[in-house]
Amino acid sequence: MTVPLSRYGRVFDLLPEMIFVIHGAKIVDHNPAASDGTGYPSDQLNGMSAENLAAESFREELSGLIASQTQERKCEMVFIKADGTPYDADITIRTLTSKEGTFRILVVNDITELKKKELDLLRFSNVIHHTINPIQITDATGVMVYVNPAFERTSGYKSAELIGRNPNILSSGKHSKEFWRKVWTEILAGRMWVGEVENRRKDGSLFQAELVISPIIDPQGAVVGFMGAHRDITHQKELERQLVRSQKMESIGTLAAGIAHEVGNPLTSISSLVQVILRTTQDEFAKEKLELIKNQINRITRIIRDLVDFSRPSSYVVKPTEINEVLRDALNIVQYGKKVKHIRFDVHLNPAIPRLHIVPDQLVQVFINILMNAVDALDGIPGTIRLTTEHTPQFVRVVVADTGRGIDPGEVEKIFEPFYSTKEVGKGTGLGLWVSYGIVKNFGGDITVESSPGKGSTFIVTLPYKGE
Ligand SMILES: Nc1ncnc2c1ncn2[C@@H]1O[C@H](COP(=O)(O)OP(=O)(O)O)[C@@H](O)[C@H]1O
Ligand SMILES: [Mg+2]
Image (cartoon, rainbow, N blue to C red; front, side):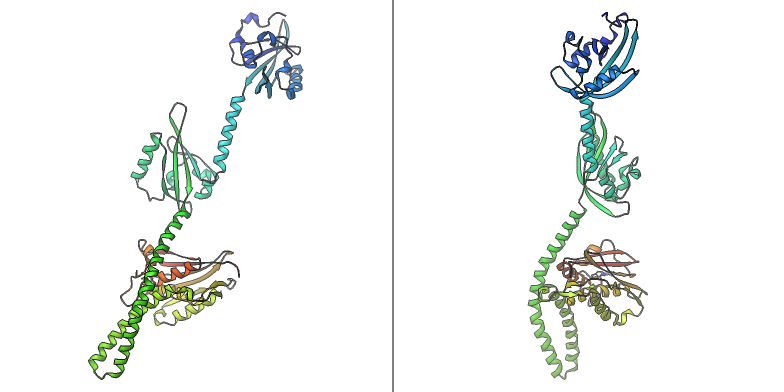
């Protein structure tokens, strides 16, 4: 058999693909790439049955393709090398007709490496796609090109709303330009940046995240993009805040109990002595001064009572309680006062609220205080106090919303601190919310506040429901 194609020179010897020339079912010629790639010496390839290039299970298919009359076929098969190593082969079969006869040309590319890379890539993209950590990928200019489903869930934005945009649409505005400039300096230099950031969700709420930004660097060393991996630490931050608060409460509680005891006892004797002298003396001047003393003692007593209330919760009895009843009791007490004439009470108590295991007296005290605060916030302003109860399978929520003067953003954190009061001396002790918070925390609940100055405040008391 003369060597086909010889009149063109051995052009195909220069090609990187493995090329086999087949006549009948036998290999009659091939290029050097073919013997390099398969590991068969050249003289062994010539005369070999072409189907033997394929792995056992593909042989029939391969000989079928070679025997068929179709002009061109492309497919993938598993081929096998001389030493038995399998490899992924991307093959093309063509027919060549020359005056020497009709030949089939088999062109083979070893795509094992390519497939492995593809698979690696698929694995990586799957990991990123399905991890619970919100991840975003940007190009080198910082424009988002990918966000994973966790990122969509956390941010509230759909992927389509984010792709093509700058990540700063998520910024809460808490961090300065200077802060972000430093971040950019780091990552543009190809270094990783780790830090805590505050982001804003689509619905306006904030979430705290630990963010790791790593530059994506191509084989030439150029930064081609950035990957930002977030870890949502909103919950952790909240817990930290609560821990600090409750530790503070605890130490103050111990102190308060001591003071209440130490001051309370002498105060009781002073008080009864004053009563005795008041009853027995005829001296008008002394009587007048003693009345003043009595007022001052009352003031101290009020503070002491609040302190004692806080420090003896264990002496109360927990029992299944209708929270709506508790609220009605508190309302009755508050509405009785003359400061409430100009206030409309808008009461929506959901009758389906399950009973809670609480101490009713303590909870009455909590709601009296919250309602009284609302009344005070409406001092002289006609307005509304809306009282609502609602429940989920896990929680009962009591919402007290007033249209009063509101609380300055900077003050919101302080209102739960003991002795923080904006009221005139004698009107407020600043212990009400502190005590209330302690009581509610004791039952595993929480008090939160939303307020805008001049518009009003909403106090939300959440109590866990653990079943009847
Ligand atoms: N509904 C409200 N609207 C406006 N400010 C409030 C409201 N509730 C509480 N505050 C603020 O929180 C402070 C602390 O409340 P509290 O602990 O009950 O103490 P007090 O009522 O004795 O001042 C109040 O002095 C007031 O400044
Ligand atoms: Mg109060």
